[in-house]
Image 1 (cartoon, helix red, strand yellow):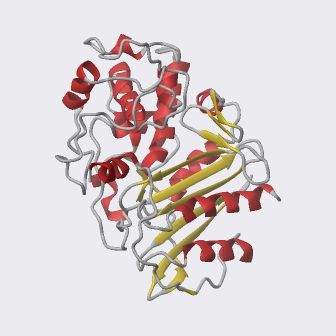
Image 2 (cartoon, helix red, strand yellow):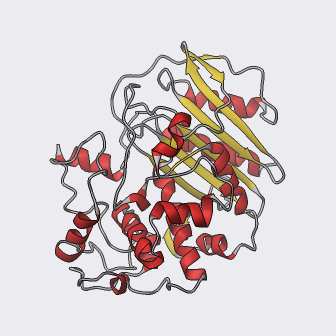
Length: 369
């Protein structure tokens, strides 16, 4: 039981054996502007086994144009839907935005990537080895996936992060914090590390995580449906579905908001992706710089992972998942192509991996142009 909830909390996605949904009929006609038959066929093949009421919201970014492809499973048929401005939980794609806020602070000279985080915690950390801001942003801090005092037997499984507040995080930092590896030596994906980064940025800036996002990213880029506050976008929310296709509650975050609290739309994320096509933007350029080699075909920058596609092209990529949603996003700033996919497919649905597969296959189609 304990291991199951650690999987849930850490977004270590598993192929739950829940029974296969009968494949939907293909009602994807006529094609929206800018969407080819090949695009539509890929979407159908990857989405046809998702549950009733599943929605996918896809953005295809070309150098000078963005096209949207919305999908809804209704009456066991996949149909097109105009949902590019509808809101989904983006899960761990939030980590890219947390790293972007860090890059803002670095460019402004308020903090250094190599600076130890202990300088910004009032009490002495339990972990004596120095951990830097860079290591939080590129998952080499050595910190575990989750804090040890996020107890799987006491949280609400339908909203597991909501009650993990600043007091509990401080309790962990001063009493239970311990790196599993020498900081800077090993890649180890950590929701705790990203959440801690967001928490420390609040101290540095004097503004909440939500305020920083609005001031530094969302408002300047006119991302009007992006926030960590559901109340601001509730009327636009696509309801999340659990692993068997039933409605599931929205996840709320407190101290670990930087790990996964953002809600957004395909239109807004396409705006953010297109901002990366401006190669002269110093903040975004900093997030794209490779900082660690994970393996032969994967590096990492700040927040962004840098995998190679089947065609051998390195791209920026991140995905995300919660109990009710799965998302994937990839872009190639030099060639100015990108793909955004948001969905209300549970991260614990047996076919959730098809969202990432679809993202990379669509990206390869674009890069082949």
